Image (tube, rainbow over all chains, first blue to last red):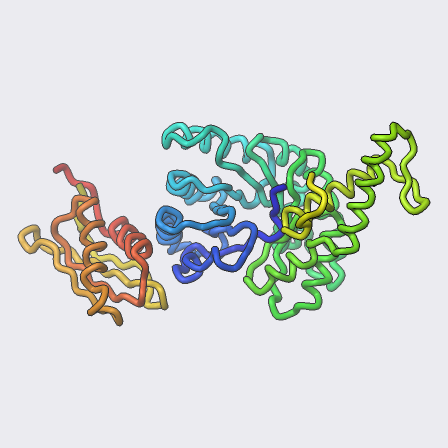
Length: 295
Length: 94
């Protein structure tokens, strides 16, 4: 099971942060060539990220957020970065499937040029406008390279002509649409960043909320946020124990060729089994199911 | 082959970075690297080697390089050199 609980943004023109980006335990690091880089330093960030990726071995998934291809920087970003084979290209401000298809073609050409395995560079897109949310499924399903869609918070709220609230009601519609689109397309849904890094209480509340909605992970901007997200996403001992007992009961019923499965007097149907399988797969992926049921 | 035709700079004096300033010189002056670094004694030669390697790869044989190192790794030195060259050079037939 591929985990993307945390996708940590790393400013592309900061050598110290680029060098150390891999040590904090994020599932994915995103080297940013877009919003965190001044217009006058786009070339410098591109060279820095290129050389960091060429000479430093990162043990986690490495993504690069390029500038949108409608800007003067997007194509150059792709040309430079694809040569060092990122795991993932993240496109900002995706609004239509055409955005994805165009980048897919450029990646395909780069894979041929550099002799990379066809289809080995993945894509994800951030959706940051109402139009993008309306087209979320088309974007998510536009290419077999697509592994995730994310909601980009601040731009999205600006487009909606609203602002952040404590309980996140301004995001309900966008997050809801995004998770439905991602699930239908069979890819990950990633939540937006929480920029107030000193406000741990609200960060925990927001992360818990988006996990309950079905999101697979969250974009983070500070290493301090990583462990908090991972803890929230780790199944508890009680959840793992229950999942193991559900699976055992189900397997026993299959052996007995019994059509009815129950555990502690409660009926177990296939969706319950699937949920238990997902819990155990998650526990295995985070190393919390040692010696337990293997899926 | 590239020729440095105008002054340029890239990088910063932040920790882990290096500030590179390129200045054009006439062809007969060749390459001159002036390096400042807190680790000059231990790594000065290596830093200069990286700078000269990038210049050689780009076919540049005349430039003055002022480098103010703040503990940059080789990959950072290479990146800052590439940016400074892009900002200062033009292609010449050679």
